[in-house]
Length: 431
Ligand code: GLY
Image 1 (tube, rainbow, N blue to C red):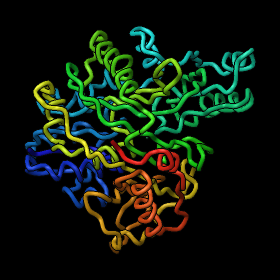
Image 2 (cartoon, rainbow, N blue to C red):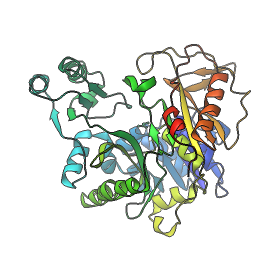
Image 3 (cartoon, protein in one colour):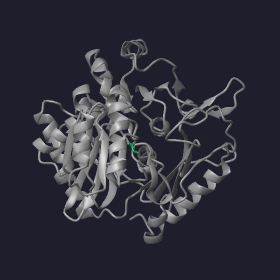
Image 4 (cartoon, rainbow, N blue to C red):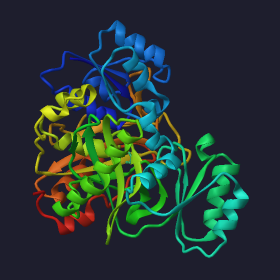
């Protein structure tokens, strides 16, 4: 197959790494890609927000499948433009991607199709939101920008002052641009978080292994929310019974609901969940692989990924067997720039990666990196790299990931030290 992969993050590096192992692959292009994806395919530097350019490239190079990694082009409708041009696509339509593009729409879907989630109110107006926040509410509450904010538009507010400041930041100061024109104030749900994924062609779905993201910047879940500072898989707290509840109470009704809404979902559906005493509750949906969740999933996915991507795109998923998973534990630790998720410096030289022995059990996936004119690897983003390692135990996976993290150097390198620590203490073997 001739595959075009869209994106440039750690997610896309891990997808490129996995796709490149497929015996079905003839050629892989990654647009725009990063220095990591260039190890597994050909990076092509064009503006992926220009869908006419993507379609023209795909036609000219006889691309047989396009895989869209990030949410922004999905929400903008790139999948529709490619499908209209007769090109097979892994990724949902613009209408289906609204599940992530608008948290207001996502709440409507959950309400119409009885999918468990927290109570919420929507606001466009600061003074209405402030009156509500000053009413007899139980704190903390969660304040969310309705639109896309790269995982940063969520504030858990312990007090009315913090909540009001978050609302002003989103609506008045436009901290997230138009994404904050509508703000949700949500009930804070107690429980523990898990990320659930399924591959789907809109008729059949295949659940993927469980993961646990670590969204806060600092150890112990402190500090601001980020796109994710590290992930473990499996999430050993999720029993088989809970896994079934997630499928029955969340995944199935969501996919049926989307069909009912005339917005068939094809691609990967990612539900961010809080597991509570009364079962799973949806915090949010994403319409793509999580990052860094994708990195642990790709390292544990032992089957050939390409037939699954193709079957989601062409509606033949029911013909495939469930994939085989590596029973080992996986731990992924993100190395970020100092200052992330706020402002950070770029163009800082990175060293130490070449000395790390990489194989199918340990990979350094690139996210915000580039090569400068002299060929030196430098930082270009907030999340710079992530090290993902497998181990017989979560403790071993974690030790291996952190040893590699310590071998990589760049000024201001910022990482959490507790990814997988609690799981390592309580969990000895993946299965
Ligand atoms: N790691 C969370 C996300 O990708 O949205």
